[in-house]
Structure formats: structure tokens, C-alpha cells
Image 1: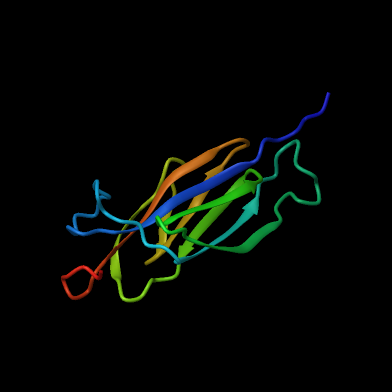
Image 2: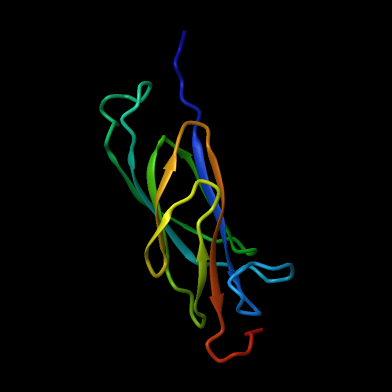
Length: 137
């Protein structure tokens, strides 16, 4: 018998909050090309190589696709943090932890995201607004 751990992932979207209500509503576009950074610590669980237990993860950087979506895949169980680089010309909107929870550790950081084996954590949202009150084309 092989005790293999299924990989986990964290995904979400950077989007433009057109009505500034702090919720991603239908029709609110994603923002492409935004830098997202993942850091974390591997859990000390059976099935994880002893040399990896408690090891730091990252920083790993990805950029959002044209629809504002990002994914960090192939993750071991552990505790993670997501950080967004504030996109220009947008101003800070409302962020929201996704399906595996987390807490705000800073303006654009959601941390203490706890992943077990085979968990696909979804819907980590980073909302942005236009500082001038109009929406860039």
C-alpha cells in the first residue's frame, strides 16, 4: 500500500467592483495581468516526506489570466497566504476569503488558509475599484 497525498490548489479572481458593493456581481469584469504571490508552510502530517514537514513554500508568483483568474496547484497540505500586487490604475476594493477560509493579514493579503490533502480551495476574491469613480475602458 502506498499512502499518497492528493495535491491541493487555491484559486480565485481579481475583479473590478463596478458598483463598489464589495461583492462580485454578474457582469463585473476580471482584471488580467495582476501579480499574485503564494507563500506558506507544509503541514507536519503522516504521508508527507519528513524533510518537507514544516518547510516553507514559495514565494510562488503567477499572473491573472485575461478573465482575472489565478490558480496555484500541486500544493501539499499546509497553511498558505495569498498576496495581490495592487493593479494600476485601480484603488483598493473589498477582498474576500474563499472556500477554505483565511484571515486578512494586510490590505491585499489573505493568510492562514489551511489546506488538507486533495482540497481545491476556490473563490478567493480581490476586488478593485476605479479611484476616479468611473470605470476604465
